[in-house]
Each structure stands twice: as structure tokens, then as C-alpha cells.
Image (cartoon, rainbow, N blue to C red; front, side):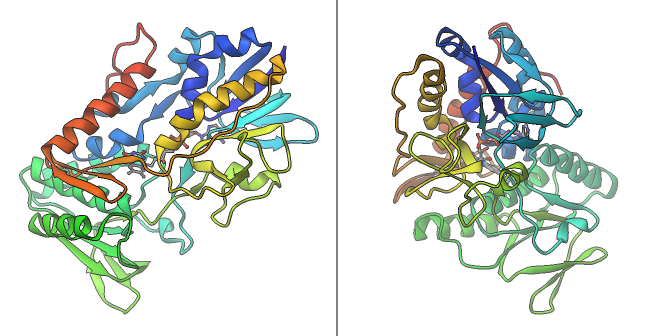
Length: 373
Ligand SMILES: Cc1cc2nc3c(=O)[nH]c(=O)nc-3n(C[C@H](O)[C@H](O)[C@H](O)COP(=O)(O)OP(=O)(O)OC[C@H]3O[C@@H](n4cnc5c(N)ncnc54)[C@H](O)[C@@H]3O)c2cc1C
């Protein structure tokens, strides 16, 4: 048997775990190194807004791995010795491998060091959003008013987090006090969609500003022009970069720090290192961070990992040019987008819930009950 260590239980590896029998039949033994719970990003803002419970967005990785007969180490990989073909875990255990597959996702970059301040909340890891919800709820309970929140970042997740926080305040009977501060104009959706979304957020009490948060003070945030905003909590939502272990590999990376891959999902200079999802970039196909790419790469990754044992020719993965993306706006509505097409309303959120809750349901061990908070 050849041994493949799957690092991270991201979208692609969930599929691999469910199809571990295919690998074993090909002579490949999969081992999973991942935290025991997976927090599904598609439902993260639904949890933050108070519409869903934390448990509805979680997948019990330990139960899934056990159900499909995959040996699981409930830990993170901290270092990979490529020449020695050995991987070190957070609990200092070492695992040898013939190949490694990385599906470790992304983290929130913080080049300005704002995260060192008090009450600063990066969007990733997503577990932080559950704690942020509890923090906002207790503030409203104790003071009878919403906290002043600044969301730094004008990308899709910055807008979605601002909408979710507005939804949370609304659910708790408070008027939202939120500033969404963006360094450059939002271009991640058709212009009319951004205009309509911005107007909807303004109506709900979100103030949109073109500026940059440069410093966290006591109950304030300072912007690049010197203006200070009231700020009980600061959310960092300015983009995503590859999980830190990727930079330590000594392999070719893209400009934004992702592992550069050929079409077979292998590193450009080490064929024993495979990857999928946010932590990687397929040469010639720059794509934004989205779970759908890991999902679509998964069957190709499964085939190519199995080919290590079966000797079959490897398959090529071509990321799709258009994809459906639906934002949860925290008030029972959503914004759906595919290429230049978009629509906003309840049907968009209903479709999102069907897709995302369906995904989480399929990834639970067949006997698994939804986890409780
Ligand atoms: C607020 C928010 C909302 C979003 N909503 C959506 C959405 O609705 N739809 C969408 O498509 N995308 C959404 N995204 C983007 C989405 O989070 C990512 O694109 C997606 O999760 C990437 O999937 P992945 O499979 O690459 O990795 P992930 O889903 O991030 O999974 C990676 C896993 O690897 C684990 N890991 C990390 N490092 C290690 C290590 N060293 N060892 C072991 N395990 C490790 C992590 O704990 C994590 O469980 C959202 C992002 C944010 C911040």
C-alpha cells in the first residue's frame, strides 16, 4: 500500500474521505490529519446573523473518518519534511508518507498587525464568528443597544459579514451600528448589484466608507485620513491568503501565497505534493477563494491519488469559468450571482440554504445526528 496523508478536511478532502474505498482498492492508504470539527463557510454568516445554530454549520470529521474507515489524527500539520517524506503534527507525532494532499484552506491576512488590538475579529478561522456572535449578543443584553462595529474590507465577505451583523442586531431588537470600511471600490459583483446591495445595507443602518482602517484605539478605529470611528469591535475581512503551512514548503507559490499547481493538482516542482481549494492556484486559471473550486476539483484529486497505486494516467482539472455564488444578507434574503447575472431576494437565500444545508447533511456520517451547540 502507498500512504497518502490528507492534510486538512476542506471541501475536496471531505469527498476523498467519503470515497476512501476507491483509494484502498487502488492500493493507496489514506490518512487524515485535521481538526475534529469542520466549520462550513457557506453557513458561517447564517450562524453569525443568528438565523442558524453553530451546530447546523459543523461537520464531525472524526465521525466521518471513522465511518469510512479512514485513520484520523485530530491535529494540525505543523511542518512537512519533503526530502525525508515525513510530516509533523501539533502533538509532535511524525507521520511518514509517499504523497501528501493539502486542502488546508485560507486565513485572514493582517499585514498591519491590527489583530493585536482588543476585540479584533478576523473572519477566519470561522470559529471566531461564533464567538463574535456571542460577544455581540452579550453586549446587546447588557447595554440594551448594539455595539459599534467596524468591518474592514470591501470584498464579498466584508459585505456579507456587515449584513450578518446587521441581521444579528435586528434579531435582538437593536438598531445596527456598523461601519463597512473599504480601501477600494467593490468590483466583485456586477455594478448594479453592488449599488442595490449598498442601498439595502444603508437602509439597515450600515454606513459604507471608502477608506482604510490603520489603527485600533480604545473604543475607536483610526482611518488613514485621521478620522476616528466609534468601535467596540473590529472585524478584519480584507481578503484571504493561503494557510501558513503552504509557505513553509519551499515550493513555488503564486503572488498571493498559494501553492502553484499543474493541471493534475500536483505542485509544479514536487509531484508528491497534491493540493486543492483556497491554499492552491492552478496555473493559468486565477480564481477567487470559494468552496466550489475544492468541490469541483475533488473527483480529479481522488482519481489522481488512486493512480499512485493503480498506475493509471493522471487526469487534468480545469476550474470552471463561471460559478454560482450566493450571499446571505442576514435578513432572510440573499444576493445570487453567476457571471454578470444576479438577483436579490428571498428565493436567493432559500436556494443557498438548500445547497449548503444539503452539503453539510451529505457530509455527515449516515448515522450522525446534527451536532448540538
Ligand atoms: C465569512 C465567510 C463566508 C464565506 N462564504 C462562502 C460561501 O458562501 N461560499 C463559498 O464558496 N465560499 C465562501 N467563503 C470562502 C470559503 O471560506 C473558502 O473559499 C472555502 O472554505 C475554501 O475551502 P477549502 O476546501 O479550500 O478549505 P476550508 O473549507 O477552509 O477547509 C480547510 C480546513 O483545513 C484545516 N487546516 C488548516 N490548516 C491545517 C493544518 N496545518 N493541518 C490540518 N488541517 C488544517 C482548517 O481547520 C479547515 O478545516 C466564505 C469565506 C468567509 C470568510
